[in-house]
Length: 261
Image (tube, rainbow, N blue to C red):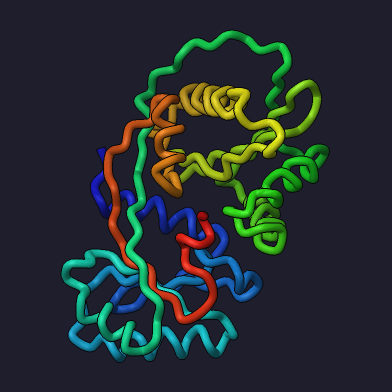
């Protein structure tokens, strides 16, 4: 089982594929000036306690505002970060507490009936646009403005493999595997609205689990965005091993909860 630091290591390795990371004495700054609206690419992650919270706030605000990006914070260890949280509120930051489930596959491959209407394939240059169109339609992914650039970065990055599901020949669902060291993380699970409720996500997840097993990867992780999605993944062998509690502070724009609906 991973400890907290190993979970964060996997998380940060994922962020670093689309954002530049700068280490500080209080945590990390992530920034992608080409994607100013991509929230996860532009956040200060506060992982250490400081006696001078205002200095941290000033540093982060100055860093992002010079790049014309809205300053945002992810804050861990909330119980010991109350001084920082209060200072952020005094500086007119919005604040919300988030609970992020962490799920781990139990490594059991459940046999499923072969659905002759379903075909799953690796995303290549030939079907790239079909996969992109699906992911751009999912508002939780940030919409076309964000996902178009992010998908391109992932497609050409060696750590990602994207998959496309067709139902009766129609491209209608996607998912990808991000690999770091011997760990795998499932991301970008999406289905077009008109094809939901047919069990297609289960078909796609089963396929990815087989791929992970074939490649002898140690673990398959998923970080669902809410409890509803968490329950969906539980049907397919993912056990909730932790619920990470963190704070999100933002000086403008929407909150994470608003984006996730």
